[in-house]
Image 1 (cartoon, one colour):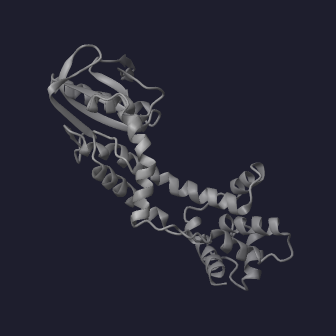
Image 2: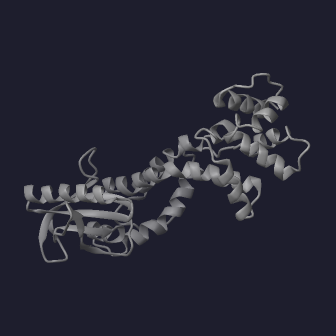
Image 3: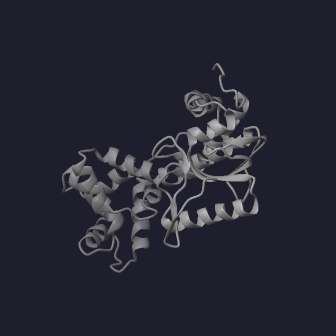
Length: 296
């Protein structure tokens, strides 16, 4: 690929992409029925979703698996957004305290005309990820830093902001609306511009990212494509209901994941699995179902 980013080398960029991809590794373990139901899915919701959205069993199960994986992947993308700045001139990514610290001995001109030499940065993936208590705590932290060092500014940088912006951050602390010209709310594109002097630096990084990811994956990043067996195993559990049409048999298989000891469901499960215990706790009933689904 032709390399057009002046603020980071191709090697450093690909190394960072590779490190981010490696964080996906544990979450790409293949899902079997037991892992799929490890936090106990809501069978009623799953069946509503399948019917309302007119999807197949395979689609709705795969969507749920994707949702479960995606819950923790946001942290990995946060790693990408924050730690890329370790490769930028003048930037430090500390282990604690601030997400990014940027120092420029030539000075950093702020929109209101102030010139400072250090930026202390808190980063958020999305503009709506902080509640009022978290916002107040972060603002007080920034306010304390400015009182301690009058040659700095503090930025709340958002990867996904409502709009491109570099504005005074206005929030509420102890019921009072507060703002300061050196405590600012900045979108990611404008933060890249501050660091590089290039208004399109973030845009250029985004253009380079897809091909870099593809190249790293092709080169072998240690990430393997998972083989999920949930639908197959649900199909085996559905075979416990040969007297029912396929769609209802699959629904009963899903119900079994959430209601294995509920009246009606438990009798059917005990009978089909040839079990005599009528008072098995949920975890034992589920274990028998998982074993049955996996061994067929």
